[in-house]
Length: 437
Image (cartoon, rainbow, N blue to C red; front, side, top):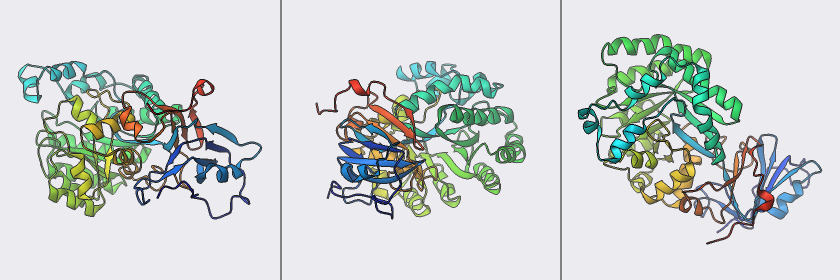
């Protein structure tokens, strides 16, 4: 059953409620991103959303929600488009200078990791380290803020981002400080993650890990620069035992766990993630069926990146259908990084459907509610419901499934974060309602 005749409202009646500060109306669909609904995603036909302060106060058919209109209520006309929750990008490396476009070009010519090494080409994190070490927070803001603004304009209202390119104490601190400054300047919600264990040093590995544990992790916790600690579990990076040391130290100071793991070979990172009750396992191309069962039992989401697999020509792109069938929460992210200049979660939805086998519903949940679960924020963002944070996007499409279909363009028209309009379509009066092709 569609929700065209239902309203999702707060305990008090609409008639007795205080007026809303903002109402989004004129939508062909309001998409709740609630998988408990009978249609699997929760679509309110001809719906509207009312906002007071930074929270949603009512969702329903437009005539009922209109009762919350007051003298000072701002009205936004969706123009026959759709309204979704603000998109969530739960895995990015937003903060970096330079890029690895040369590596991308060589990969497009057919070189893999071994081929790049044999050709004498420095690639991966070591290449980026040379361009990021020693940069100040100001330098990193200047290098990164335009990307953040583009992501916001495409409908992403919450971004997780990691340190990990300068690969020393000062660089990691500067990276996370830059992320906080970008949040202040753009209105984005940015979740910081410490990723000191991003690339293996050529020598003195134990000394490097000791410095992370004794110096950097405590400093980051004291400065409140991050909510999570991530580790790269890979045969050529850090092994399970080394990563367990880092995550245990992070847990001692209140940082949650996230893991890059099992992207190329199955090294057992999923078991460590389950033991640590990690928020997410990321990449996960080589996860076994047993791994997925363990992660589902632990409540750990799996975040995957079909755009990244495409960008690096991964030999085994992840099968999204298999993830969904396993029972884990399946999140989709860009993995924006120096070798994957991917800024749009709209595009991620298209990749997830065409390359990874997700349905449009699964892809949209992957960039909203499930992505929020991957950063432990599902209680406040990722779906549209009274009491949740007022993060909303108005898309200029007639049906939510069109987001995955029109992945090559930006259909976001209005972007609202915590009740504040951050992207205001100045062309709104000149646009006709969305139509089917």
